[in-house]
Amino acid sequence: MGDAVGQVLPLAVGVTLSPLPVIVVVLMLGTRRARSNGLSFLLGWLVGLAAVGTAAILVAGGADASGDGEPAAWVSWVKLALGALVLLLAAKTWRGRARGDEPAPMPSWMSALDTFTAVKSAGLGVLLAAVNPKNLVLTLSAGVAVAQTGIPAGRQAAALAVFVVVGALGPGVPVVISLVLGERAARALNDLQTWMARHNSAIMTVVMLVIGAKLVGDGIAGAFG
Image (cartoon, rainbow, N blue to C red; front, side, top):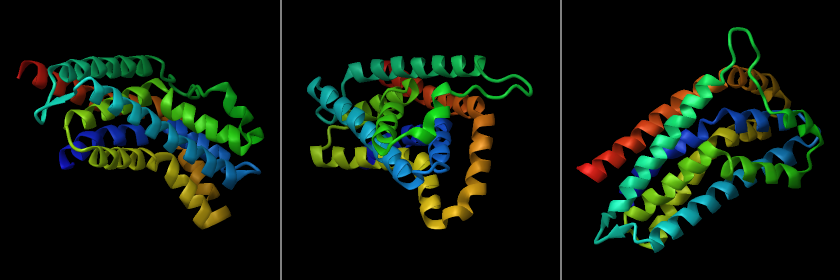
């Protein structure tokens, strides 16, 4: 299990450092339904990561990702492809960054967050966790990495749980801070939201470059090592 956790931790960090869900949850925490929407979004985020990760493990396991305790050859090629995709996403993010004093572009639907119900907030959490291209690639990579270790199903579930929990720290920490500190957390959370919005592209580019390089490196080592 230690090998599986070691494989998924860097990927989980890449998920949790995503600025967008942090910005969304901080904005939600400033609305009338702050607590219910913030908690619902976090729950949806957890469900989204767990669902994609579980599906990846089941599919990779069914395709014999591990043989005699060793990763199957095709797993290395999948890692190589996923790593290349992450690097392409990094390049696209950097090209689309804000220039100079230009405000960082944010999705137009964010302006409607104050009208969201708990159900909509949970649905948004699922979508941003499971459908967002960067998170989707990283979570699929985590599932494949767990499956390739060949450990028993219970330990695979535990390794995936570690990935999900670490991957939820980004949106989860603001929710916890808000619950504990209440109105006293408003200024700190607003400052965090402003900073992450301003540096969204730079953060995402660096994270994806590091994760993409790791996946490509692991893929090359497995395929040609």
